[in-house]
Image (tube, rainbow, N blue to C red; front, side, top):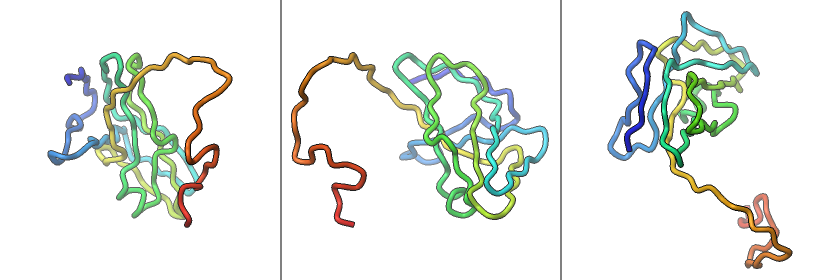
Length: 144
């Protein structure tokens, strides 16, 4: 699938790092370093603008290493970028650690996954088919 992209940053455009990667790294595009204090959240710009085909979305997801090593994650994970959005791809980062974290221009801050989706048409009804699971939820399928 071809997706149009405008790169106003001085970073390379996102790419798949391996042949089996699902996501591409997004990099911060900043005038200067930004400090994320413990518990603080900030919108980090990327300088990227995309034109997705109809029926597709872009999902902004955390980078596992950043989350594990530093407690930094994407707040609205996964963030959805709709096909009709044309603004800068921003990433809402939050610092869940107890230490300041500095974001510098060019830092890899999130992953971008492009995904196709289906639109639904609701069909109102008085009954839906039952399953073995039924209405049990929130961890009901496992014993731990």
